[in-house]
Length: 282
Image (cartoon, rainbow, N blue to C red):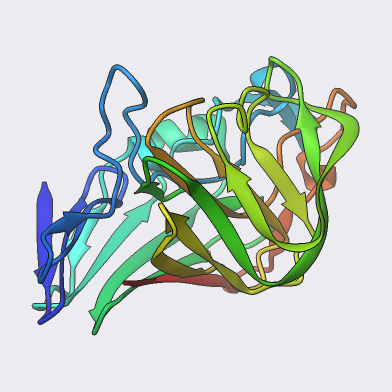
């Protein structure tokens, strides 16, 4: 089901399947900012990554001595959320564990995703509540894709020196890194940037950055304190994904328990994880 929200500046559409932002249009110019999800290129638009980021080794993990299976980026993006608390410019979506999710991820949880339009800004707030009587381990990531066709670059809020974490053809971390930025704010993006998969950065100083196309600022994205930050597109495709992550792909090092996974998040019983990203549209 597609839910529409709008204000005086922006109009947005959210698909309740995956609580995925499907459209974001600036009314005065009629421009679409969210990638169109073309099947022949990449069908995603703004998927949610939960309870893992990327791949786990052999698509399996061990928890409390039992082996479970999880596919790339987890299952939140492939489930229906219930639409709640709808207003003209705000919508909230909720997803809880199902019989099927418990077979592959043995935790009960409550996930909420709230979309709100204020002026020229869209904000998306994600919460995950642990409804178990034991600690819960998970990863979470956002993956919005923005239309950008030529002369594209990211300009960080602060000068950065960053190395990308390399992954192999299986999407697993290799342990190698490659410097992408050296005391600069600008990250140019072209048809070769993502030939070896996403750029994955850790310990980014900036809390946000701007996406430019053809010398024009399209938007400012606030990713906040996410410990990992990814950028990705199909090589040469006319969009850029900006991906704040609380977690990271597995390496080839096998962990004996999911609780020891690199970048894993932990919630005590009844506790809540909360993360908000926003994009100011120009």
